[in-house]
Image 1 (cartoon, rainbow, N blue to C red):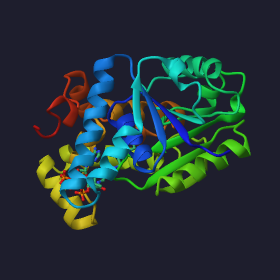
Image 2: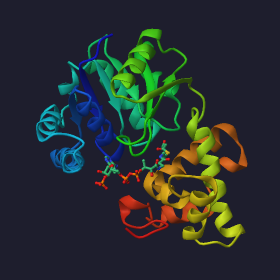
Image 3: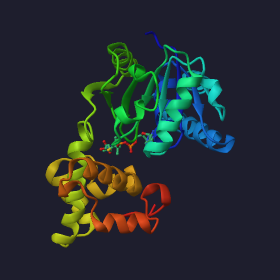
Image 4: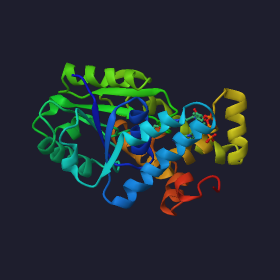
Length: 282
Ligand code: 3HC
């Protein structure tokens, strides 16, 4: 199906990043948040990053302004009624996602493709909350969405070929790399990355090294673009702990379980960059 209008539900760090990618690629975007203030914050964030591109000579002012003008924010789910594709990026919990997809099914056109950006929940379980699971797929972006090229396109048990092909085509129009995969816990990257990051956190205590030293080890010794502590702070310690718990629940491998040190940080509100403090202060 040809996509010209994209809805994004939830304009936090991931949703705003996805909306930015879509407007930059020329799509009309309707971004939905629960309050006007959150919508305005997301629009300002997107405007800021696009202004930086103008300042660095990567875009003209006209291109920036045209991209910003393609974004409309709303608090009303009904504003998504004309979208060809809706990408959900709300809180990473099953029940709210299932409720949202049931509402989207009532709101959106019958031929619209509905995608979830879930990182570790089952797309099939989300789709099962609707009576049209064929049009539901996963589109898993990586943080920060405007900078990371990969999008996993996740085929749930009942996803139609058309829905998967539409998502893959849109990823190409975004200028990103699509890796289609099946709906298994953690899909491809998080199945590997989550236990790896958990190992990194355990090594902090086992080898008695500081976060700075561990990050220096992995950037200089393994060629990582950023160290594991910096990366977990970027992803969000709450998000990472939640993804670890979801994988552990499904796969029962000890390495998937979140290290107690990370759970304690999450419980104390040390969530990384977004809270101003995680392994590092921001
Ligand atoms: N959104 C939009 N634009 C952004 C941004 C964001 N969140 N963050 C930075 N930018 C823009 C800025 O304008 C910045 O330029 P400026 O500083 O001059 O204003 C520009 O992008 C370049 O930023 P950086 O200089 O920080 O870019 P780097 O070249 O250093 O690369 C990186 C940054 C791409 C993040 C690189 O460090 C990297 O690849 N890190 C690894 C990230 C990673 O592994 N992500 C996956 C996490 S796992 C995940 O997401 C799965 C989930 O399910 C948990």
